[in-house]
Image 1: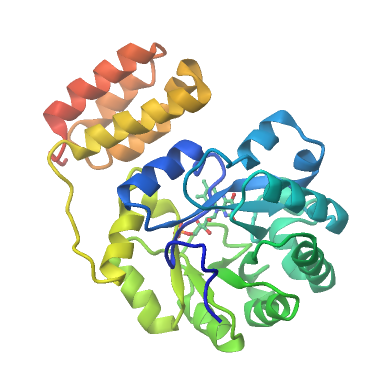
Image 2 (image 1 turned 30 degrees about the vertical axis):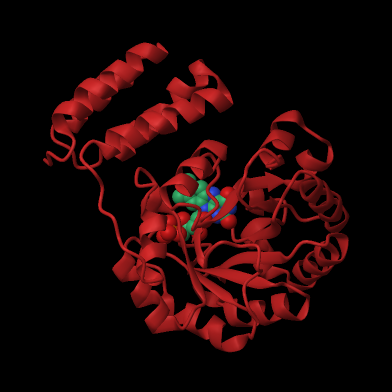
Length: 325
Ligand SMILES: Cc1cc2nc3c(=O)[nH]c(=O)nc-3n(C[C@H](O)[C@H](O)[C@H](O)COP(=O)(O)O)c2cc1C
């Protein structure tokens, strides 16, 4: 089976709460010339079916000109059906079910990676969502709950049997969180267990590592998370490398220009005040390894005025972009 035809690539930007919002998706889409598959931040089904305004806005992707898969998280099948239908009305190009989130607040309610310990409920959720929408439904999960309960291959089979169109597996257990290295061997086991497409996730941070993961595991595509923080061009570069298109390096000043564009998109979406607050983490990521970055960041954290923030970035990046520590 192939990946859904409405996806532009087998290279995915990973869903990241607080990160892969509309501004981030716009930047990654632009930098890849539209060649990266995009997933929303996770959306809580309880809040979405109550039409909580903030959650509703996160799920509403109608204004975006490229396909966005909306990821849902929760544990109640009936609410999942409601939320998936609403996400479909709000423009989702596909529904992804989060069965991998390790955060205690999520797992305590039986959602996210806790569903890896409850295959009966997990299968009911997948079936219910598949029946509730006309969109393709995918599932994202982990290696297992902990080292003593590694069950990703069985879990993958369960997803396939209940109608998932494709799956994504992150090669770490819930107990590992985001630490240590991802186990790509388990990703190969998952690939061998099913016929639906498998997307591999965990520690892909360059075109070379993406090619290596595909060669070692046989996966049908890759998903990139943390390596895209401050490098929104990376998923597009990986897509280009995998598909034999010319790889363009960064032009002089492109990091500064991209950061300023990102902040402008944050302003358009969240307003100036919140854009400045949110820009702080992006400024740190975009200036990774730059000369004297520590001092610049310390000063930047004190800025709350939008124009002042832009000027500080102009000044620092003009002098230091490309100058490493
Ligand atoms: C800040 C942050 C937020 C995340 N939020 C989500 C999320 O909302 N849904 C999800 O399925 N995974 C989430 N993840 C996990 C990533 O999608 C991905 O599985 C993980 O980072 C491993 O990939 P990487 O090694 O490429 O970063 C998050 C990860 C990070 C670092």
